[in-house]
Image (tube, rainbow, N blue to C red; front, side, top):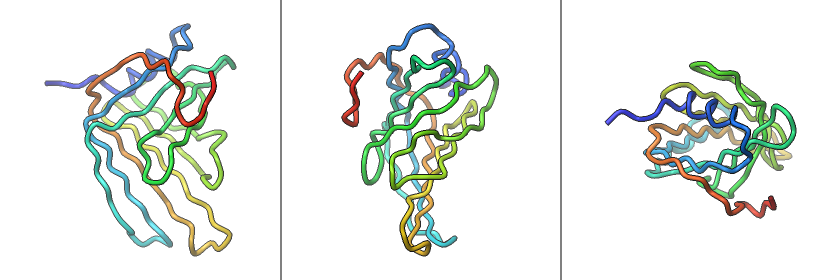
Length: 148
């Protein structure tokens, strides 16, 4: 069964006038971690989700990432133009996360960020790759302690 193109799902939803959150469930999530250029580990989760919401501020959206190895987090990003792919920066990442990037194409959503540490040798690079949309649903309850 073919899945919905991820990039089109994102742009279609974010270019609507509604600010209602959308919960997107993906068939797979693969998380990889590196430290000082060395592979640390890889974790795969089935049925993983993100929450996508258009913000009242013009041109901004917010993504909540509940399925993370350590803690749930959210970040803001500029709403992409319609197209087959989008590269962007994560804005307003919670500490200790930084250097966040977002990539969306028809087949995958890739989030990459760094877990910062006072000692640079302890910093960890994290990549989340989500594939194959299984389910789309309106999700009205806030996550990660957010208030709407």
